Length: 134
Length: 134
DNA sequence: CCGCTCACTGAAAGCCATTGTCACTAAGTG
DNA sequence: CACTTAGTGACAATGGCTTTCAGTGAGCGG
Image (cartoon, rainbow over the protein chains, first blue to last red):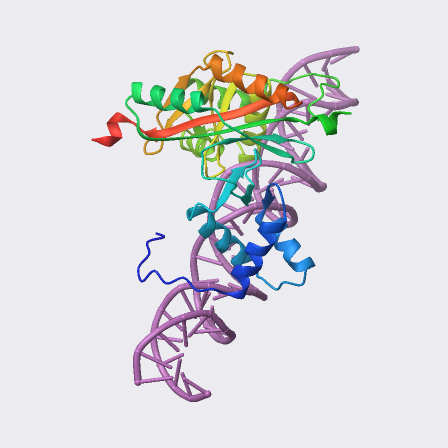
């Protein structure tokens, strides 16, 4: 599973298109949205490829992903490697990256107290942003 | 949308079956699992009804639900109304309810600072429990 | 350049939890 | 006992995502 066997990664047009798009857009977008955007700009990339490329990029730590309550996965270019969470507007999808080292520590500690190892966590904050309110 | 118009709730056999089952089982289970359990005990309740009943119960605050990373929704009888999060074992599904008032406060505050209103959040902690480790 | 291999592609089919449809059933009321 | 209408459930549909598999083309050695 994702083990670099011969480890050769090829530079394909499709990969470049996806990366180029991600460099231009801001905020989170779903694989489907990104695929539609690519179609709009005449970049012929299959949906399957979009999914695979996004997965690869996430694994490589170049993309950042969130999951909406509905289960849909969103992606966006990772500004930096630091672990963070998201404050997302339910209306417009505007996203703010937030940091909560205390939360991380709390989660790890708590899990440790209960004998859990290999601990990870998910946390997303939802609300309606100022723009969408008034 | 879930607005109590005439607001009459009927006591049906199916509802009772689901509730009875939930009273007996511990931990989180998916709608599909619960449906299968009901079949095993000869309780004839349709899958659709199981889903609807669970939804109603969650809205009424009588059930507690989590979502697995895979997107599957899990339900369990709510021990108490207090807002809490879950520490879930990736292997066996064992769940520990955890409280983090500080986290709640942090999330609300942070959202407020960014001008967000009507704020909610999700947080789940995953790991492997002591039993599953060895 | 040429040919070859294998990573990569993508259309279509599959998967799977969940939701919608709609004719039917029965709870609770008068 | 009617009778209204909440509730039911078999089935179809949805939707995001994954798998399949017959190709295509990136990059390398010759």
